[in-house]
Image 1 (cartoon, rainbow, N blue to C red):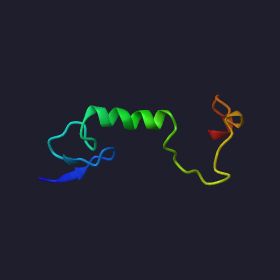
Image 2: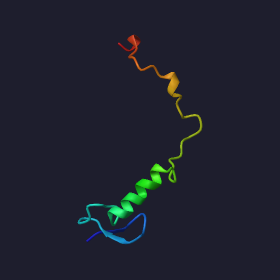
Image 3: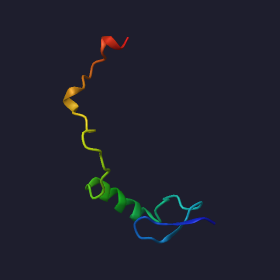
Length: 65
């Protein structure tokens, strides 16, 4: 049986039989979600690749057709 460590507590997780995989439990799954929502984890963005939301028009352009 394939086992991987839980990303939060490092406990071995049986991959095929654990419904919360890659986490060992709902508790670890919730801790991970909380870390993302409180911005403890971040995805790196290359400088200059962030788009300004004000520059995008919500209506479709007639030039696209």
